[in-house]
Image (cartoon, rainbow, N blue to C red):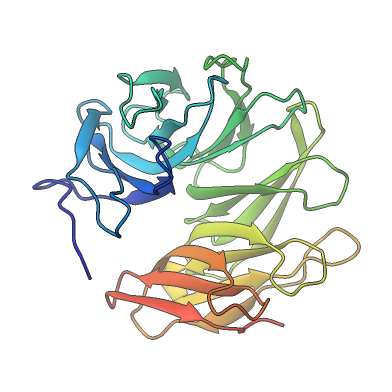
Length: 299
């Protein structure tokens, strides 16, 4: 293990990876307490010291992702600032340096906790989806394609839902992107089906179990049947929950995979780690301080 400091008291909560300065080497961004830290790759598996960009005093960015939001061919950084109720964007210069933050409001006491980037209205311009943990909602900001966005449109779940993570995919095979959020307080996931014009309808929820406290959620075809599935890290029950998609465009009840007593899994990634053409799941166990990989666990 090689460690890189994010600063005293920075409590990093999320990370994203991309080539930020177009040198062919991967870089990474860390979401820290009141800033994002940029670590540029040196091409030999090591990274430069952190360069920080402020997200605002007591902003608490909980999620970070990377995309080109203003169509200048340079990657930008996007964060969900929970305590200041906004999505923050740092526009890239293509050199690994970034502008100061531009913010977009997500509503009073909304508490944005997760963020995704996709084209929800098929206009070839990237939009933003955000889970709003404090208000129990999901929000969508449609993009103009120049780095600015329409005002957030809110979709309700429940006041006490506590949606902490968000993902997207075409779950009903209608060539329109849908959204799923994990509801930490309710013990469920909620799906919003896209209408293809940037609006969403037909809220549908599936339980993850009483006291499960679902956190990180992802969408992927986990069993190679060409139908998207959903996986979620159930912090409160020490397991990974999987909802397999079926041919009638709904989901089967959750199947769980134990992560160990007291493990509290809180992050997920899906890749083929052993080159067997089968997707594997890697997750971080907050409670036991382990990174774990489930190889070929799903078929």
